[in-house]
Image 1 (cartoon, rainbow, N blue to C red):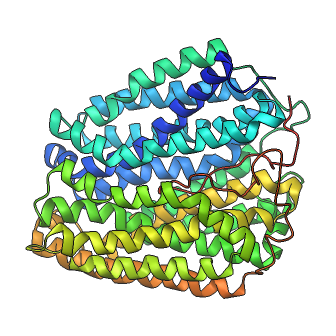
Image 2: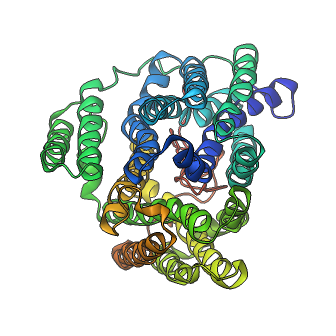
Length: 486
């Protein structure tokens, strides 16, 4: 076991921060590059949707099974595979000569992200001494969060410095350093009792999401219906399987169910708004890529500074009121952003909505993560966290597919500032309604759920969000009170 403060501890920490930070950075950096990608490749709105959704689809579909792969075949091995995969896919993204190639590369990127996303925390929990895990996870969480905070700014600078391609190619040296550190310093670990991952369920679930997303984006009723049927089949498989990816009995708990529905609605609203915000700022308000990236940085800074405090307040007083007020504030911030129209300044048109939006996210994300995990049995803590993360990614995926069609942003019409602004303002109302509905559902959450969990652990509480990223809730693969398998 590794002790805190040693050279090897610093190397292991750097490895996990580089890998997960690379994926977090990419999650925010690509949004800023979308208008330049569209201009160079002649992309329509549906093309841009696929560039985003290809990545989210692979990530949401595979994140549940990826943790099992690490437990069975070796956490370092799967993590390194994910980093290499992500790096090579980034190279293909940067070299893409048309939209289909870029979309295919983004799908491959999502596969790599799914392999490495749960792996970082698993490596820390398996590698560090029990008494040092809290400090290691805290450092990883906070420093990885910096990548999310600087992502929009870095993305804007890279796009302006040369091309949108640099936003992908920057991952190559990061991935190379990460692999070298992992192979030299990270000890291998696995769970010898782990069973075979449920590949059939993962395949059926991925097919369902792909068909549903494709049907919505391409407005194909046949694909949409087939996707819904595949998702129903996924549910049947989970109910009948002896070792399901998603144990159905988890949803018998009302608090677990409502918390995940809230997660879906809030992250759907978040995903839709963050994509359209960049397009609105660059197309309608004339912002540069760097300026549009900087515009949303206050959201991430608020999350970075307030997440841990928000989690502690929920632990002390119960999560219900934060789960109600947070989404309502998110919705209010979205409605304020309707003032971000041509002719408005950043201070009056963008900043008030961004600040309220960020405060609402900080209020809700840490408590909802803690609530999901506290409402699940301890032996299901890992899968409960994976479910919550997959639900959030799926919400963003479906919002990105549905929202442009719902507000009339189709074809190349989004390039017209007047059309873009009308669609933007309508989308904000729809997203605000979704977020507020999520908050109202939280009245049904058991406010005692966190009080039942121990306040002190040798590692962080499994739901504690030391830093909650904007792109999705944190993935905890194992309960803090459970001994990591060596």
